[in-house]
Amino acid sequence: MTGIYLLFFANILLVNAGINPKTRVYFKQCMEEDAVENNNACLLLNAQRVVALIPSDKPIEIKQWTIKGTKLLSYDQHYQNIKLYNHHQAKILKAGLEANEILETWKLVLEFHVPEVLFVSDYEFEPGSKLLNVDIASKGKVTYHHKDYNGTLTLSGGVTFDPDANFTATDSKVSLTMGGMSARFETGDSKLDERINTVYNANWPAIFEDATGEYTKVYAHVYKNIANDLIFDKEPY
Image (cartoon, rainbow, N blue to C red; front, side, top):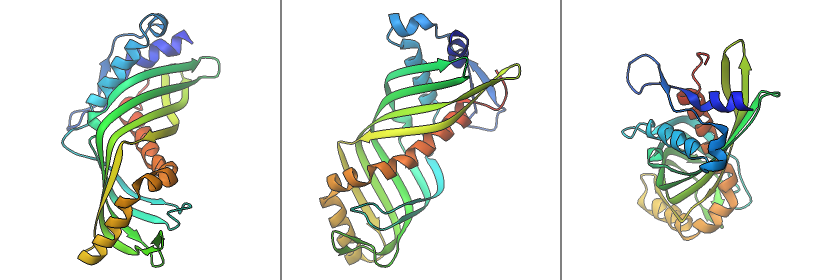
């Protein structure tokens, strides 16, 4: 385990936000003793440094995503041109790393808090879409405002040696809690906007409980891409 543990956070590859070539950044080594004596202080430090590299002046973007119907939200939700704001404000609260040098696998668990996250997107709810018997079939732009966004991210993957180490995140899972959530739908029809906004905002706790498992898939996808694109460069260690 020691070899992977040291290698994992001794050298982290990052992509510059601008046009500069990829740069190798050396963080301090995370000794195994750190997990026992310092409550994973080194992992926390380096995870927070990665967060600091998320650009503050532009959102994380996803081209498109479809959230399948759930019990309460029984209709498919089609989103395009998704923009996620404020992840650069994340505060890492806890960090843990498990590594198996024999199986060449690793698992990283991070608990984090973001004061607020904005999900802005073009959307379409197809004809027949209803929420609590309210007709919400429409298309336009939506902004979801998540307050006190608390998450646990579990990233796992493999490492190959040929002979240098190459890391890849292959699986990502996210669990979320929120202190509050609001939605603003804009369709160009003020009466329709009011109807959809009212039913969403009046029932956000039930909506979150019902659909959070589907929404977390979006964020899990984003965080895995951040790991592979910002941390694990294709160049070997």
